[in-house]
Length: 238
Image (tube, rainbow, N blue to C red; front, side, top):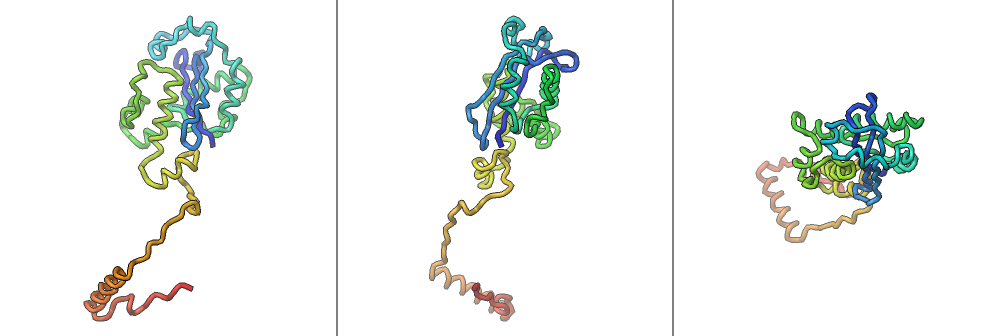
């Protein structure tokens, strides 16, 4: 399944209170690799941003005046997202705004179009309970370079979150996880087709076989001939 890491910037904190989306950034992953097939929109929210929001994203009201409205990009955006797993940090916030924008243009809800929604904030809280799990905190914890993030920006934050997500879902540098990187879009190895591997068969040398037999004889002697492998010798495989 395709995965899309998504982030938004808004005029404020309340979609129900009339705040709107001003920026959408999307980064595509396939087989846990960046494809470069990204989407980025600045939007005219038809209202000014709150002062506190301006301090976060730094996108001026004047800059957005000539940008397209959500209705002008909704078709392109939803076709891009259709059927994909959407990865969002604090998904409840972004999805509430996307649902409100879709409602205003007479479209069905966000989750009716996408395949699923994965919240990396929920994942991080389960993995690091009691710790700060903001995007910046996760970047620091997981070794993701966020030095260019002086202000929030939807596309940059989506790119950082993609890196954070890969690190969150890797778990450990094991063979099965590495195989999953190239075979499972979700990044979790639930089933591996081992027919793809050619495993070498290394037979014991004559010297090794003799040494092994000597050890078994010593063990058998020490136990008074009561070792189970002497009492119940293995049957040859047909």
